[in-house]
Image (cartoon, rainbow over the protein chains, first blue to last red):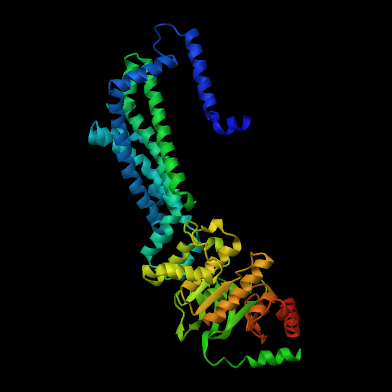
Length: 256
Length: 266
């Protein structure tokens, strides 16, 4: 019996214990201390209800689509440029030395500092937000892919030389597969950064997407809705990372 | 000491058709002299073992033949041509198999790397791959990834990939150094068998004196700092060799004695 129970029923994951306990505690605290009309906090069940309302009336899906389109477009541009630059710099030490100062000067520019500039150039909307996301994801991608190229096993390069493999064949058969896992990890990390930056741009300036929905809810004194957006953004980030991790484990294990 | 002298003298006349010749090779990195005035001829189909103290430039000699290193002065002649770059005629079995196999490719895929570099039509790959795997005793292991194979199996796989090049020269850089004694012995016999059936010329770097004698037609002893050819020992033991009877042969034992005393003073 004990054996059947052990194999048949799965215990809930231990990682869920702390969040569930925290939610329960907050619910109790809200019941004990929160007044009827509070404009700062909301009880967990009110947040869940607000989340359901925002999903049902279409405002949350629409905002999600706006934010994600900027995240994906910006990530696509930033990651593609970053990988191309990183591979070029990883393969050519001279180019790396020539561009080092410029890269190190541009890399630390805070994404939020670009908002006024991009407002002047592009105004509100998709383009301005996407550009900032692209700029932000470009640098970590560049640094990580440059490192990925440099980490290619020199022994494998010698094998390629001994086999008289040309540059293209060497790149496709050896360099790219060697670097693939690191490049994918770079993509997973920068995807998280992209979501963060997109929301920041929306909170600070751009009147669209999840960040804007959150700030509107806060300014119209609906803490439960603002917090529902916050929870939703957290779920999105978690889901994005979980999806990419699954892909990594499923398809990239042999490149480890 | 007398037999040693005559053997060393006998080799001063070059073999009839040297496939590989080192001609007055010097090699320095900055102020450090690695090799000095290396002159050595290796005949077609010959199995040459190279021994010497660490830092004597054994591996560097091998890399010169491979075209992976260039001499500061002198020429390495391979098949009548100075070696200027790596060539597929020469296959290298690297010491560290874990860094020479593509970890994301199966055993079959690793052999396919060489077949594709050789321009072999894809339709021929499956047959060639299974024949090569069988040659090195890996029949049925084609779907395994290197990490799923033991060290001995990985080194067999690397040898199979080298054979896929159909090389005239097989360079082996302490290939069995990381393997246990039993595995090493069986691989030694397989390399001897492969070398004789394919009549490939082998340049075998090792620090194991007995291994050098057991495998070689000739053992080249080097001095260190800078690396120089000290002595060549003709082995002259009957072939095929046998792990028991060859190693008990009085001639084997006397060669072993000579080599040990050579290494001690080198």
